[in-house]
Length: 390
Image 1 (tube, rainbow, N blue to C red):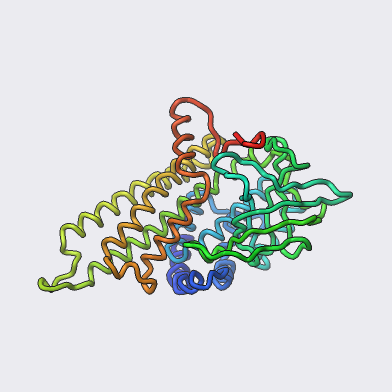
Image 2 (cartoon, rainbow, N blue to C red; image 1 turned 180 degrees about the vertical axis):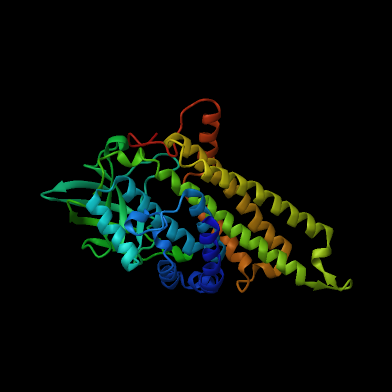
């Protein structure tokens, strides 16, 4: 079953996603055509249960598919992973009418859902703390605040906005996610998104000014989102994306050195022992990180929330370190031509360098891994409980 899905994903990545990747990157434009192709193939419903018309992929298969998409287009993979994680939250916390409505929009109409959690004054590496406030207003809700890095802005149909009920700073009792239609009055963007990499995720800042939404648009009760083992899946998917990008970069480098003929020997530079050493080192490091990712995905279903945090942290930490090293080494092996935008090596480096900034940070991940080794309980993120967070 996994092989079938990954096979289809590989064909789409090679034939549809990869040929568009450079254009989306250059224009910093949402990958609308690629989203449409993935919807037609059913992949926007990867995290939607089969009962609702989705694919209902298990975590090992999902991770393999997302990693495959990243080999073709990092930005498409990242946006679809964000969307899929919102689907997981709806599946875990949504009411039956909410599931029917929102899953149906994805499966039948190809709609995408973004996740907006980052804020200008809060570092998620220090604490999971939301200043965007949501409060009751009659039979509905009102949202006020500012969000940063709003992925798929002006591209998705709905956004899962992370809020604090009544502006409380105790996230264990106040964190509430609201599904907000993109065309809701009061939402404005600064349209500023000109970054090093991950340019086609289109993630500018967005302001919510007295944005009114319906009473049936929040997921679960305040604090519930921290206890369902879904937030941790962000990190596992990120790891898959980083490694997919690095794998594609290494494949490019291998093809390049096998066909690049140099004088006076008139042989391919793949015959150079130094090149062979670099390629071998990159391959070994990628294989090691992939083994950890695959193992983490295999153990996901049976793990509790704390266990999933550990699995995601270790997979993301190793994927971060390895993908940064591999994409940098690829440019070194290819040489000066590796810096040309006409070749994919420099884009892979830019996308990895930007994508690996997604929280939690390397320091926070290794701290949490260390705590677990020492028998100290640690989640994916420290939970904010005051102005400075935890």
